[in-house]
Image 1 (tube, rainbow, N blue to C red):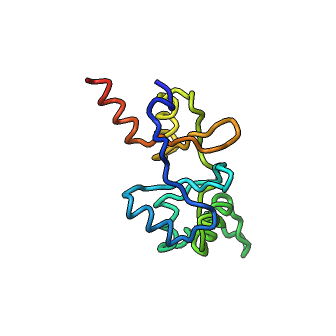
Image 2: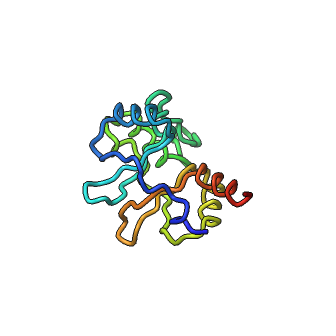
Image 3: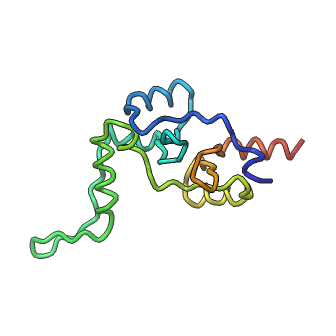
Length: 152
């Protein structure tokens, strides 16, 4: 089975300039855990998940570092710390979104998408055309629904 066979095509989206509050209200009112951020031309810019919004409450985690003779050497996480700090200060979707999004084409095997979800601990995969325009989304629920249909 392919992504285009199970994907949701009527995808709720937000524009990059949508406020963080608008994004949060959309997630809560539609009982979804993430929403794609889409430019005016339909290109996928990123995705905002509940996890991204948690940084507004928790703030960034300190990066891993080693203190030697008074100098701090960061060996892991400085880039991630900066990204988390930016999310804390974010006021709109573009600033809080995750821009490095795992995507798939409409003709991608569902098995491959499910493997990406499992291995990368993600809950949804936007489906984009060759030009990067959002055409659908596959969530964990879509895959579970497909499994139930296969049983019948």
